[in-house]
Length: 366
Image 1 (tube, rainbow, N blue to C red):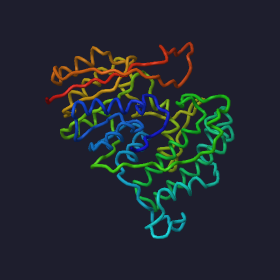
Image 2 (cartoon, rainbow, N blue to C red):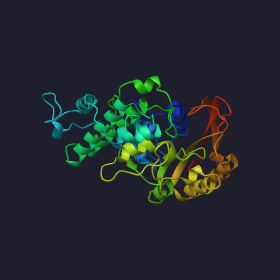
Image 3 (cartoon, rainbow, N blue to C red):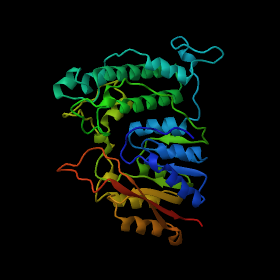
Image 4 (cartoon, rainbow, N blue to C red):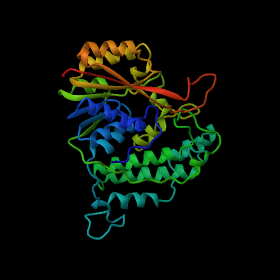
């Protein structure tokens, strides 16, 4: 079984993959699948491993990177264009991804944008007291990101290799980020994980079946689709907008090579036009949900949501029964330990340490 993306992420379904898979198999769903809120691509990758032809999409660039690496890429190609730079093993067409990752892990720190703005050793980071990364790890992130971009621009690596390496960097950076899991704030003392050295790991890619990645809004994606078997939905549960909670992974994914983005505030936020989602807005999410269910040409829907979601359960039930066969509607539940990105405070109080995850299912065919 493949290794799934390990980024700390709100709503990540890694711990629920077996639960989701079990319900899909019991309902005998197979064929093509669409995941328009793919996030770290953990579900898309599992569906791919089960033989689904998956279309995975997200409005965030880092989400597209994960989908491109873990869903669309079907193998880890060698890189002949790097033979002059990365030591290759005799008998191969070029350095393997293993060789390239080992080379990147051996690069010395070379400060650039992330070091300058998101570590206390850089001018911008020092001015605002930002402690997202140690100076050394920030400079390693900079060097690795710049080298991956350079290789792509001169044609030394294929697109699959580019996105696989970039996904590996995003995961490695998150593992040493001095946060509690989201980037809306940083911890004001160094955590043990933040002191560890940045180290990329080699992703394991499952052979695909015509899978692809997109970077589109869910409704925009749905409007372009031919009929497909499974619509897997995992929309945001609350009012927190992902561009503000994951602005640094987004920066690493997009890069700073043609023009450096303007940063604002203590945490160094970036512009988020086109990335704020109606699904994270109470009062708009219900209309967005109904529009997507009405527009997408699905045969089956499986929707992950939890008991704290901002779309009322009555709305979910009404919409799914209206657009599917009422007798096929089911709601399954599973209790699990919640992911906490922060501690209880005056502004944010968790209802408990456990949350109930629901899978809402309906079909248009028996």
